[in-house]
Amino acid sequence: MTNKTLSCDYLADLACQALAFEVQLAPKPGLVDPWSNGAHDDMTPQTFAASIEALRPYFKGYVQLGQTHAGSPDQLFQALRQLGQEAEAAMLAATAGVNTHKGANFSFALLLGALGACHGDLGASWALIEAMTQHLVTQDFAHLAQKTSLSYGERLYLEHGITGVRGEAAAGYPVLRQGLLSFVSQRQGLDQRQLWLQALVYLMATVQDGNLLHRGGLTALAQIQGEMSLLLDQLPDLSLAQLEERLTAYDQVLIERHLSPGGSADFLALGYFCTLITQT
Image (cartoon, rainbow, N blue to C red):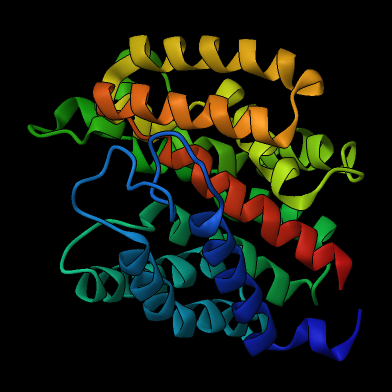
C-alpha cells in the first residue's frame, strides 16, 4: 500500500466521494438523486451534500482512532461508537434534524477505523470488524424484554430475529464481501453508471433493508425484493436507456407506496468506497 492509502485525509476523502457518488447516481427508486427526491419530502441532494461535509472530519477521526488505538478490538469499537455518536449529532445539526446518513455513518466508522488499524488492508479490515462487533447483537439486544419502549429495530429483533446492520457488521459484512463486490467485479466491462444502477437492483433484490422494514414491514420488503429479483434476471438484456426507463417508473411506484430502500443505498456507497480502495 502507498503512503497515500494510509493518509487519514485521503481515506476520509474517498468515503465522502463514495457518499457523493451514491446521491448523484440516478435514477434510484424511492431515493434522493438529481432526478427525483424519491419517497422523501424532507431532503434533497443539497441536504446530503451538507451531511457529507459535516461527517468529513469524523471520517478522518475514525481512521486516526484505528491508527492510534492500542487496546482490544472491543475497546476500539467503543471508541469508534462514541465518536460516531458525535458525528451523528453533527450530521443532524447540518441537516436541520434530517437523518441522511445514520446507517452509513455507523458502517463507515467501523470500516474506516478498521482500515486505520490494518494499514489500509481491506481484507484484514473485515476480520477486525468481526472481532470488534462479535458481541454487538447480544449486548445491544440483551434486555429488550424488560424495556417499556422499543425502537423499530429492537421490535424486529424480538419478533422476527432480524439483526439488521448490527448482524451484518458482526458477520464482517458478507452483503459486501460475498455479495455486492463479487457482483460488481463480474461486470467491469460495463459503463460505470450502468454498472452501479445494476448493483442497486442487486442490492434491492437481496438486502434485508432496514429502511424498507421500518416504513413498510416484512410484507413491503418481500414485495420489493420480489419485484427487483425479476428485474435482476432481465438486466443482461437491458440497455442503459431501458434500465433508466424501468427504474424511473419504479421510482413512481415507491413514491406512491412511500417506501425508500435507504439500507441498499448505504451498501451501494460502502461498496463503491471499497472499489476505490482496491484501485489505489
